Amino acid sequence: MIPLKDNILLHNLLISYKYKDITIEQTIEQLINILNIESKLFTERDFKIYIIPSIIKHYKLNAELWYKKNRKHEIIKYSQMLMYMMDVYKFGGNRSLSAIGRIVRNKDHATVIYAKKTVQGYLDNDVKFKEEFKEFKQYLFKIIIQWT
Image (cartoon, rainbow, N blue to C red; front, side, top):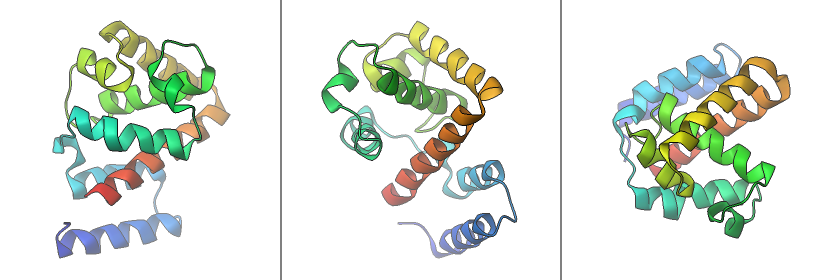
């Protein structure tokens, strides 16, 4: 349960974003501070039974393919974005690269390093991807708000 003062801060934050008083980046930064997301540690089980299935359902991905070895672009794209969020934004707690890879798709630390480089490259050079990533971040934080 979120304390009343945090609810009021969240409400004001979302209104500010809705009326374009602040950017999505500022909104996310403040959201992290209000909910103390960086220190909120989701367990591997939380990721497997709630967060990853929510992503699969929201983006209409094939759940069987998520955990199987494959090169389907849509699966790879969202798993890389989740790995990036978990490492760069500390989404779900401060974890090692090996732990992030294992949680997301049972991969090793090298896959997480590659995912981070790939996502950062797209963010630097691809406007369409940047918009998709922005929406993905918003969706993940929506999951957190529903969770807390």
